[in-house]
Image 1 (spheres, rainbow, N blue to C red):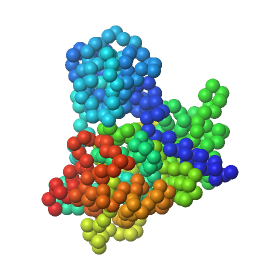
Image 2: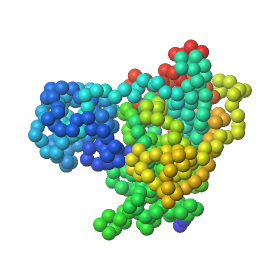
Image 3: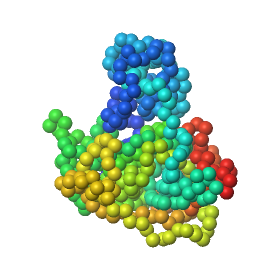
Image 4: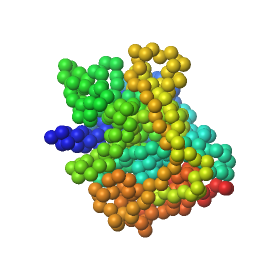
Length: 453
């Protein structure tokens, strides 16, 4: 009975990302609260002018009301022409869709409406990479790695500064498999909650305290830990998005990178559980396309990755450019943290211990103290040919080929110690979809075919 309950909970975790839990405008109530509106009234709009969309997942409707009239979505930097400023109900204006990179098809209609609060005059440029760090998620091996760009002109190998495990989307259909592509980090949300509140925040000041450390997975499903609405407790799993959630664009299919249930002291327990035999026989316990990692890892990522950081998702075999791994040490770096309560459902502060102490955050706002082992030693996950794998066997442990792509379809190699790919393109396989920038499969700074080493 206990195992059945745990498996049911893992199945519910599948739905904890993606676009099904929507709110009227963007499907992301927390992000809407954080949006800096450049257009505050319809009087500021110029009829006939082209504007840029300022958020991801902006709903397009056939009329100026919230009803069953959704036609699709547009994303950040898509272009819309305002054809009629109204007056219309609420914040709606009538638009013409000029340019969109979204894979989501916009249904034909005589008229299109969006909220003017998500329009701006200038395009947001996240694509140009000017920073020091970038992220590579190898979907095939379920590994996330962060690299430091050592040479600004890309004339030397990049340095891997973090390696961590992931649970990617289940191998079921294109809606829930994790998409490849080149993306950029747009914002962080601490203790994120989906719009429909199926997965209540890990912590929120008005909610019951989360289950205590060591209580086990089933505790996160108990009604006593769920928030009350009109006297009744609602929610499927408490804290399914964990401590922090990283949002990316463009054309991401609402596939974010986030934490999971449990505490820091649980380490990678709930990530490893998704790759065990019993979990995969009864259910497919991965995500609905999001990249899920443990809470300590996501907290560390929140501490080091600023807005604009490239998130590159690939499906590739792994190798070493320098088999001697010169310059790398197997001794982990330590990062001390204090998880705190401020900033729930907002761009909440980092959990870095020094930051918390320097800011003078009172101890009654501390939730958990701990130390994270930052793995900075590149470890290859060997590729297993897809023709040798079944659905369950591909999901157990680390087979290096979670979607069972045949060896003849794999293209190129990913040098995990150097942060480079060579001869890489996304395999032509029915299970693989590419989102992100239409004209950039991987960042040019990590393509050995385009840099001068």
